[in-house]
Length: 156
Length: 156
Length: 116
Length: 116
Ligand SMILES: Nc1ncnc2c1ncn2[C@@H]1O[C@H](COP(=O)(O)OP(=O)(O)O)[C@@H](O)[C@H]1O
Ligand SMILES: Nc1ncnc2c1ncn2[C@@H]1O[C@H](COP(=O)(O)OP(=O)(O)O)[C@@H](O)[C@H]1O
Image 1 (cartoon, rainbow over the protein chains, first blue to last red):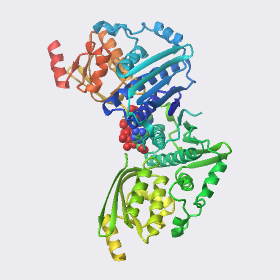
Image 2: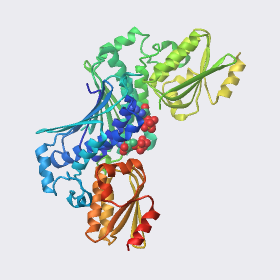
Image 3: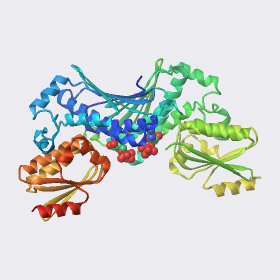
Image 4: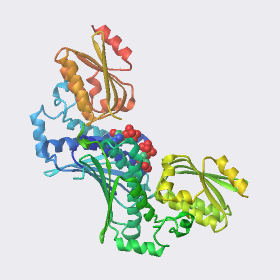
């Protein structure tokens, strides 16, 4: 049961809107102040990744983010419509995915400037309390969650 | 072409989210600082009205708000799913719509405490640069707009 | 941005201090307070809106509801407000004619003293 | 919350002052500046991150891109950062091992002076 859903076209500016909404709702849902920075960053990463993927593959398609509180957790799901296969392809066009992070050798492994998607996922994985990534032919879905107050939205 | 769309369940807390999003996007779209208060208030009124109507008639249905910039205008459309007929009915159950505003006699004309919908529409009409209200059997749609920077979202 | 409410009574006038946003989300709390005050026999209310950041028609509704309640007891509900953005909402809705609106608590107290 | 960029050169070290949010929306401007500086022959860059409120992986990408460019000219790109919330992002991604990170512009300048 998503209680708030945001749909936006693949523009970088809208990633800010998504961050703003996620942080505001996380706060209201009772996510601890100390975790709000992590929510802002992780949601921003997931949406940036989706925007970059859409700009390459399907700039006209919208990106969807659902936010809900369910049994004491604040849950965010970001869904894009860029085919996952093509995304691997995009990596191959650059210098391979920046998967292995090992010291100073790293810089040369990294894709030029953009498409830091591998990093994005690493950041999300490190920041979200719980993450699940569902790749599919139709796009990628990232579900993240954090502990929230048990009462959640309903409290007035 | 709505570039951002927010869907939310009929809870008062989400009206704040809608205000937050509308104000942030209005600012980004280049709506003058002096008008941002009016955007915040008008959008809040439209969403409050929708939430109150849904809580009476269809608490399970979501409310939709679309925000877009089109040829130099920032446009917001709030759509609810509460049948308009029933809304008139709700007025009749109270003390009639607070349509005529004439001095001290007003207080006695007003509906008890809640459902200030008539006021809400008056506020919107006074604040939005341009308003259109589309009542239908399926619900009410309020479209408001304000002048924005010609370039809008696309500017990076 | 949430609503903070406080009140105290000076010489038959109950001053209600409101801070934050009065909207569809928080207005129920203000309504409860006003009803409670009236039920306890406070019929002369002065609502200080100087620290209110945001007011919508739900908030107006609660103030009008309070006014109706105190009037039923020959009481009064007046406001302190100098903020243009808030005054504007009273003006748009014609409610400047319904409420006594003062520039400060002191001014309101003086006016109230004269009325007695 | 938008990005402000400024830079000046002191004794072969170009100090880039960054203020605001470096994200998918603003990172392109930082990238352009770094490319422009390198194209104009500034190969020793010090990016002051003390006024950065927000940094995401797009921003990291731009910094790494800058580092690769200056290294191609035997240059350096180092950072000034003491903010825990920003340092954390470098740590998570293993980039604390890639960038020299200093506690102040002075400390970075001294270290840079010794290297020469
Ligand atoms: N947690 C939240 N959820 C939804 N809306 C919020 C939240 N916090 C603030 N808002 C709304 O956003 C708008 C700006 O609020 P503000 O007080 O400036 O927020 P902040 O605490 O981020 O500075 C207000 O209309 C407020 O109702
Ligand atoms: N106009 C805007 N549109 C979309 N997002 C915005 C906008 N302004 C700020 N944000 C985002 O909201 C978050 C909070 O920004 P902040 O600087 O606190 O906003 P404010 O100016 O309301 O205080 C940041 O991540 C920022 O990118």
